[in-house]
Image (cartoon, rainbow, N blue to C red; front, top):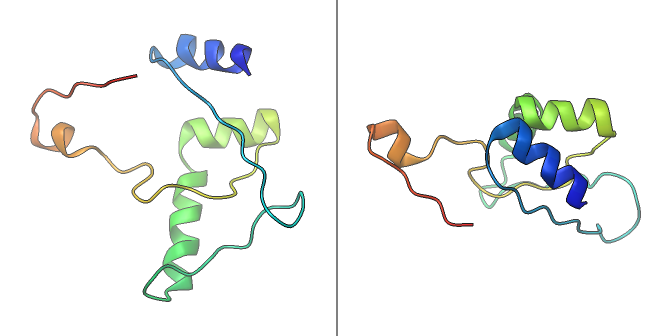
Length: 91
């Protein structure tokens, strides 16, 4: 996994910390779950948008990665960048 983190850092110019989690119930992709509002269509749309992100798309194509779950707001532009203010990151 260290090698993947090194490749990501070289590619993106940022440090990465990957984690691998096992999905309960087997090795297949988890079924999309409806959000708190019960909107399964929204969940599917967010999943599709995540799969279109260049880094995620490349991981799927090259490594055979599968999107099992994603954090709320994944892929959204940080508020600091939208307003044009400087952003600091902590790793």
